[in-house]
Image (cartoon, rainbow over all chains, first blue to last red; front, side, top):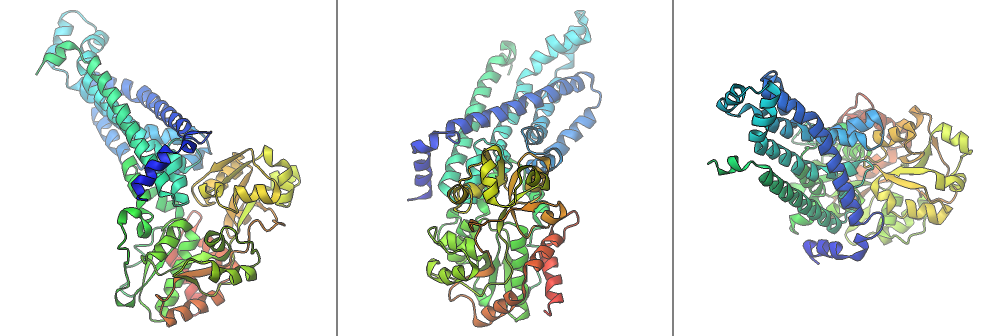
Length: 222
Length: 320
């Protein structure tokens, strides 16, 4: 049986879909870790990106920081944080948050910073305060770019959450790591296919959100 | 090494190596799949790799001790005037046995008991002699083992001194009575191998509260989980220096669930020249369990040596 056929057979096997180690459980775990990671990353990166984009203060630092964070290997951080903090949910999640922050931060900062000064001036001329300009002019205009950053982060996180199985957590990576340990390639390939499909599905949903959230005025603009 | 590719191809010891693994998900997936190098199904079947000009390729499993022993083998072969290459960190047994079979490596260090169970899951031999008697028969066609070393490295159930005192544990038989309250950590394959959870249940009736897979082969993460109390029992190798360093207790194994595990070269039949066999036999005659603990101490810890450098020290001290 070819590798692909045996991977499909693994995917089709009812045993793969049942029990506490079954695909539905692992899929939910995978989504839960990804969601938690993204929430934490959003909480950190969006306010920071908006503030830096709005005020222009610290933009050099943010660009450098985002670049440096992108260079950190997640698996290394995972091991490091687990050694420092012990087994548990948070060490892997913190490592993943560091992966998700750069694209969100860059998107938020770049989106706001690139809003046309004429628009901002128009807002100010209408008597808006700085906060109102940010909320009513800059944010709606920059939203497609900000959501683009979030989309990019979500794609990376869903694909990379696989590594949390290196330590003791679940998720679809469990099949990859366990499969490798006993050289069960069909299980490995089957799980990788699932991760890829999941990442594409999440990206498609976010693409739709991005489209719906874009102001009609912006959509018409060339 | 003849063409002296420096210690470069040998990745730094366990912990350092992991930090070097690329981060991005896609890269990780590729990396993990590629670990199987030789027997990787994606590579197709023309797997004969390196036999040009009589070079012997020494592979190793993906943990430091195997890499050090592989370097010892390479050093002994070099000393006998045989050109060698190393292919370290191939993977778990399923992966490196495949690599020997498909010809991408010629010899790889292994452990007698686990190799026997891998070749014949029904095997019942448990003493060192029984295992060596059963092995040649059990191995798949094309594979052979050379003389074993006195050195042994077994899996063992290890607990902290505190846990041992609290439950009065000296053997796995004691453990069985409180198993359902305890969490066991081990490498992912421990959940499926005959000596792992299936063996504990069958031989001792021990079914743990849960099993936490930690993919570092009883390394620092596993030890840390035990010391932090995240898990109460861990599958750690008996030659791990951390056992003595942290006053951990190795539980006795009256039912021989963890069978004898002598270090020995697993080789492709007919691909090793006679001088190579003699060189490896001579090396195995000198290698002791204490040597393994000592070598592990050198390649582990805060200031690790590379497996190649640690192996070189042992070779120099033993007249190579």
